[in-house]
Image (cartoon, rainbow over all chains, first blue to last red; front, side, top):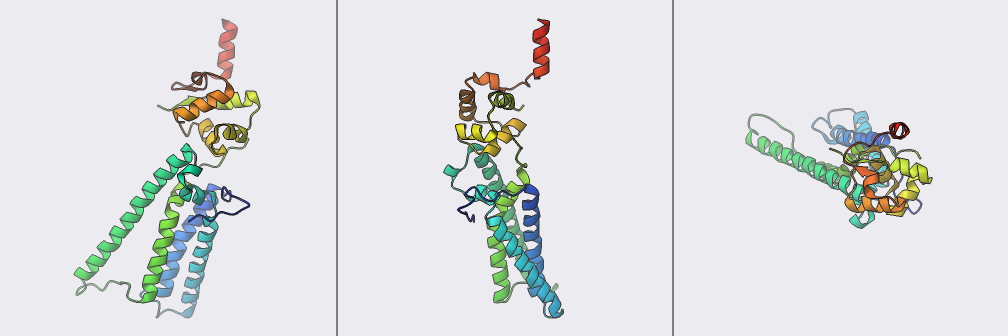
Length: 163
Length: 80
């Protein structure tokens, strides 16, 4: 998802370091916030943990929103005709890596659910049961799927040279 | 084996900025930076376009072997 602004059609210029920090914040804060809010011990902990969890999720959405207008997201999401050959080559590499990571995570998730079903009588493993759990997983997968190619680009890109 | 180039030397000689060269060949200015740093090897099409902008043969701009530095070139010419 790339949000184009009229003022900056090429995406907001962001240093790779800032973009990397925002991606790390997104990928750490969202799952941590969801665990604090909805995890297995969510009901037992104090309401402060729940509020902190909510704030962490909100911060991760904010990071996602800032990144949605960045030049990295532009490179990841623009049609081919709007990118040059170097941008396309980088984008193709990033998309391939993102697909591999996403598919790997889906496979791990399926493995976890399968193990949980197999050993349900011996080990008690957490699983999503409520609507809120599935909702958190759904939005996490959406954000990850939409941002992962741009994250790989942020790690590959070097800061532009000064003239 | 990478592709070496003298884009920055030619660009400085012609007084072109990266943005101007990028506009002339239809790429993002950052791509010129990647080329100059040697982080990206251009397609034949892009190499020919860049050579055309400078009005020089493509082999003067791009080579599979590292180019001699300007100081080395001048000193070797002085000796000969």
